[in-house]
Length: 271
Ligand SMILES: Nc1ncnc2c1ncn2[C@@H]1O[C@H](COP(=O)(O)OP(=O)(O)OP(=O)(O)O)[C@@H](O)[C@H]1O
Image 1: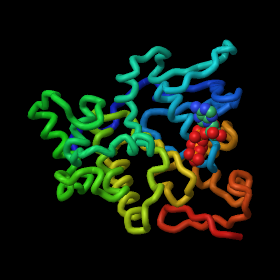
Image 2: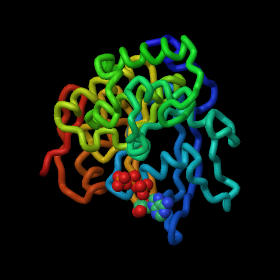
Image 3: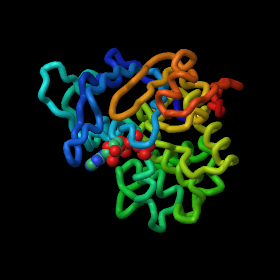
Image 4: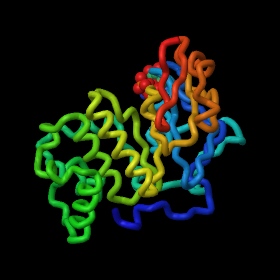
C-alpha cells in the first residue's frame, strides 16, 4: 500500500467532542452529552446494543447530524477546527456504513466503485480519470485482495466482497481514520474471518480504525480502546482489557456473560 496511506502526524486530536447532544424525531436525544477525544494513531471500537446511538454518532462526525449549541461548554472539533467543508471532512474520515452499501445497487463494477471514491460519487459518470487515480485504485484493490473481482458488478457480489470494495473506495483519499459502521452485518463465518484479517492488515498499514459494532468478536486485536454506548451515552471508555468484562457487558446488553479471550480476540459466552 502507498506510504501516504500511513498515519500522518497531527499535533491536534483527530476529534474532540465535548457535551454533544443531538435531538431527532419527537424530541429524542440520540446523543446525550457525549464527550470523547480521539488522538491520531488510535484504533478504537464503540460497542453497544441496537438503538444505542452508534450510527447517530457517526452521522454527527460526518455532520449529517448537528449538535445543540445550548451550552458554552460544547466542543465539536476535528483536528482543532470547528468549521469544515463537508467534503473535506468526509474525505478525512473514510466512512463505510450499511446505508452507503445500500446506495451501491446499480451496475457498477468493483473497480468503478473504488474509482468513484475520488469524486465522492456512486459509480462513475463522465469524470476524468487520471493515470495516478487508476494506479492508486489498482494498488488498493490488490492490497484488499480483490483483484480477481474488480470487473464484477457490485450488485453481483456477496455482502463481504461489496463491503471490501467500499472500504477501498474510502481509502483512495488516504483518510486519517476509517470509520466502519457494523461492518460484519450479514457476513457468514468464512466472510467474517476474511473481513477480520483484511481489517487487521489495514490497521497494520497505519490506517486508524474506528469500529462501531454490537459484536464483541468484531474487535480486532489491533484495537486497544473500547467505548461502551447505550441510550445515547458513553458508559465506559478505556483499555479493552479493563472494559470488556462480564459486569460491563451485562450492563450493556442485559444478559449474563462470561468473557473469554483467544489470540487477541474477545468472546462473550452465555454465563
Ligand atoms: N433521524 C432520526 N429521527 C428519529 N429518530 C432517530 C433518528 N436517528 C436515530 N434515531 C433514533 O435514535 C436511536 C439511536 O439510533 P442509532 O441508529 O444511532 O442507533 P444504533 O446504535 O446505530 O442502532 P443499531 O445498532 O440498531 O443500528 C434509535 O432509537 C433511533 O430510532
